[in-house]
Length: 224
Image (cartoon, rainbow, N blue to C red):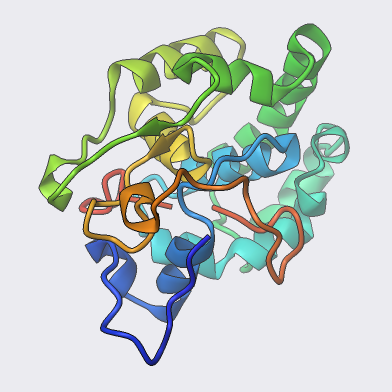
């Protein structure tokens, strides 16, 4: 995966990533990189749902807090959380203290376990909505990036059918962007496969280990 060279010409990025250093780092290292790791997929589904009504910068700033209180997003551990744990989480400033979002994370962990039992993995299910390979888009302007697609509506419908919560079509499209089911880097962005000269590699390990990832646009022009 290409890395910015400080001595080279100015780096061109997707416009949403220029708001803060946290967003730039996330964009450069994670957003749009294909992931087949169920723990990471569960993490990103949780964070995308948590963003509803908030900015992505806010959620990125609380990411470590989410990992701390939700057992590193291990679905088997989160699925065992009880009402007392929910009450403790509601008092923790390290996450978004919204009862519905907290309870949905626990419920979604249980649904992930069911998917793993029936389908083999969460990855198998979600990647089936793009035929198993990333969709590489070639948007030239941020306004061209959709907020939802036929595929995200289908994914949302299926996840809801299976009992998942906070998985509307717009949230699902942001999730698809985040984990590389679709690559929505603008063609001028240094991270677009066309600029790199190749398709994106599988998600790299970063300072946070193999679960580090998360994006964006949804299209980065709106807060959800």
